[in-house]
Amino acid sequence: MKKILFILGPNLNMVGIRDVGTYGTETAESINSDVRKWAEEMEIDIEIYQSNHEGDIIDRIHSAYGNTDGIMINAGALTHYSYALMDAISAVHIPTVETHMSNIGAREEFRRKSVISPVCIGTIAGFGKNSYYLGLKALIMHLNLPA
Image 1 (spheres, rainbow, N blue to C red):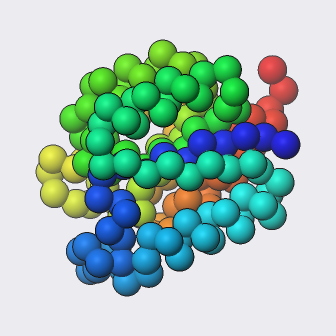
Image 2 (spheres, helix red, strand yellow):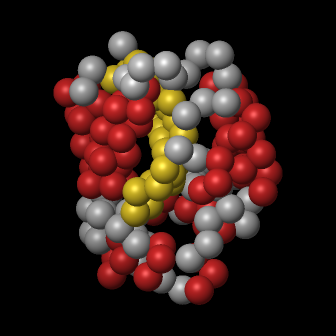
Protein backbone atom coordinates (compact mmCIF):
# COMPACT_ATOMS: atom_id res chain seq x y z
CA MET A 1 0.00 0.00 0.00
CA LYS A 2 1.38 3.41 -0.99
CA LYS A 3 1.89 5.93 1.80
CA ILE A 4 0.90 9.51 0.95
CA LEU A 5 1.38 12.64 3.05
CA PHE A 6 -1.25 15.30 2.33
CA ILE A 7 -0.13 18.71 3.57
CA LEU A 8 -2.47 21.66 3.98
CA GLY A 9 -0.94 25.06 4.61
CA PRO A 10 -1.98 28.27 6.35
CA ASN A 11 -5.67 29.06 6.73
CA LEU A 12 -6.85 25.86 5.07
CA ASN A 13 -8.27 24.80 8.42
CA MET A 14 -10.72 27.69 7.91
CA VAL A 15 -12.23 26.43 4.66
CA GLY A 16 -16.00 26.66 4.95
CA ILE A 17 -15.70 29.85 6.98
CA ARG A 18 -13.11 31.89 5.06
CA ASP A 19 -13.93 33.42 1.67
CA VAL A 20 -16.90 31.17 0.94
CA GLY A 21 -17.27 32.75 -2.50
CA THR A 22 -13.95 31.17 -3.46
CA TYR A 23 -13.80 28.04 -1.30
CA GLY A 24 -17.46 27.23 -0.65
CA THR A 25 -19.21 26.43 2.62
CA GLU A 26 -18.10 22.82 3.07
CA THR A 27 -15.91 22.56 6.15
CA ALA A 28 -12.27 21.54 6.20
CA GLU A 29 -13.13 18.52 8.34
CA SER A 30 -15.80 17.37 5.87
CA ILE A 31 -13.37 17.72 2.96
CA ASN A 32 -10.66 15.86 4.90
CA SER A 33 -13.17 13.09 5.59
CA ASP A 34 -13.82 12.78 1.85
CA VAL A 35 -10.07 12.70 1.16
CA ARG A 36 -9.66 9.86 3.67
CA LYS A 37 -12.54 7.98 2.02
CA TRP A 38 -11.05 8.44 -1.46
CA ALA A 39 -7.64 7.30 -0.23
CA GLU A 40 -9.16 4.18 1.31
CA GLU A 41 -10.97 3.40 -1.97
CA MET A 42 -7.65 3.81 -3.83
CA GLU A 43 -5.90 1.63 -1.23
CA ILE A 44 -3.67 4.49 -0.12
CA ASP A 45 -2.40 4.97 3.41
CA ILE A 46 -2.85 8.73 3.85
CA GLU A 47 -1.81 11.14 6.56
CA ILE A 48 -3.41 14.57 6.49
CA TYR A 49 -1.29 17.27 8.09
CA GLN A 50 -2.37 20.91 8.40
CA SER A 51 -0.33 23.75 9.87
CA ASN A 52 -0.42 27.51 9.82
CA HIS A 53 3.34 27.60 10.44
CA GLU A 54 5.87 27.45 7.60
CA GLY A 55 8.64 25.88 9.69
CA ASP A 56 6.35 23.12 10.97
CA ILE A 57 5.38 22.25 7.40
CA ILE A 58 9.04 22.15 6.37
CA ASP A 59 9.86 19.92 9.36
CA ARG A 60 7.01 17.56 8.38
CA ILE A 61 8.29 17.33 4.81
CA HIS A 62 11.80 16.57 6.10
CA SER A 63 10.46 13.82 8.38
CA ALA A 64 8.72 12.19 5.38
CA TYR A 65 12.09 11.37 3.84
CA GLY A 66 12.60 7.63 3.61
CA ASN A 67 9.13 6.62 4.77
CA THR A 68 6.64 8.26 2.41
CA ASP A 69 5.95 7.35 -1.22
CA GLY A 70 4.41 10.65 -2.27
CA ILE A 71 3.30 14.06 -1.09
CA MET A 72 0.25 16.03 -2.09
CA ILE A 73 0.32 19.65 -0.97
CA ASN A 74 -1.95 22.66 -0.92
CA ALA A 75 0.51 25.14 0.51
CA GLY A 76 -2.00 27.98 0.65
CA ALA A 77 -0.34 31.39 0.52
CA LEU A 78 3.09 29.79 1.01
CA THR A 79 2.74 28.64 -2.60
CA HIS A 80 3.50 32.12 -3.81
CA TYR A 81 6.58 33.11 -1.82
CA SER A 82 8.10 30.29 0.24
CA TYR A 83 11.43 29.41 -1.30
CA ALA A 84 12.17 27.53 1.93
CA LEU A 85 9.18 25.27 1.23
CA MET A 86 10.37 24.80 -2.35
CA ASP A 87 13.82 23.81 -1.06
CA ALA A 88 12.28 21.33 1.42
CA ILE A 89 10.25 19.61 -1.31
CA SER A 90 13.31 19.48 -3.54
CA ALA A 91 15.56 18.14 -0.78
CA VAL A 92 13.53 15.02 0.08
CA HIS A 93 13.19 13.71 -3.51
CA ILE A 94 9.61 12.52 -2.88
CA PRO A 95 7.21 12.87 -5.84
CA THR A 96 4.96 15.80 -4.95
CA VAL A 97 1.72 17.02 -6.50
CA GLU A 98 0.68 20.64 -5.90
CA THR A 99 -3.08 21.11 -5.48
CA HIS A 100 -5.37 24.09 -5.04
CA MET A 101 -9.14 24.21 -4.62
CA SER A 102 -9.33 27.53 -6.50
CA ASN A 103 -7.95 28.31 -9.94
CA ILE A 104 -4.88 30.26 -8.86
CA GLY A 105 -4.30 31.37 -12.46
CA ALA A 106 -7.60 33.26 -12.43
CA ARG A 107 -7.11 35.00 -9.08
CA GLU A 108 -5.19 38.06 -7.92
CA GLU A 109 -1.89 38.69 -9.68
CA PHE A 110 0.23 37.66 -6.68
CA ARG A 111 -1.54 34.27 -6.53
CA ARG A 112 -0.77 33.40 -10.15
CA LYS A 113 2.86 32.48 -9.54
CA SER A 114 3.79 29.33 -7.68
CA VAL A 115 7.36 29.04 -6.45
CA ILE A 116 6.83 25.36 -5.58
CA SER A 117 5.59 24.25 -9.02
CA PRO A 118 9.11 23.77 -10.43
CA VAL A 119 9.86 21.07 -7.83
CA CYS A 120 6.49 19.30 -8.10
CA ILE A 121 5.60 16.64 -10.66
CA GLY A 122 2.41 18.53 -11.51
CA THR A 123 -0.27 20.96 -10.38
CA ILE A 124 -4.02 20.51 -10.19
CA ALA A 125 -6.14 23.57 -9.43
CA GLY A 126 -9.60 24.98 -9.79
CA PHE A 127 -11.83 21.99 -9.12
CA GLY A 128 -12.74 22.67 -5.50
CA LYS A 129 -12.26 19.69 -3.23
CA ASN A 130 -12.14 17.49 -6.33
CA SER A 131 -8.65 18.91 -6.94
CA TYR A 132 -7.61 16.68 -4.05
CA TYR A 133 -9.25 13.61 -5.60
CA LEU A 134 -7.56 14.34 -8.92
CA GLY A 135 -4.25 14.98 -7.15
CA LEU A 136 -4.41 11.60 -5.42
CA LYS A 137 -5.21 9.87 -8.71
CA ALA A 138 -2.36 11.64 -10.51
CA LEU A 139 0.12 10.86 -7.74
CA ILE A 140 -0.82 7.17 -7.65
CA MET A 141 -0.63 6.94 -11.44
CA HIS A 142 2.85 8.50 -11.29
CA LEU A 143 4.02 6.18 -8.51
CA ASN A 144 2.83 3.13 -10.45
CA LEU A 145 4.77 4.01 -13.59
CA PRO A 146 7.61 1.63 -14.41
CA ALA A 147 11.00 2.93 -13.28
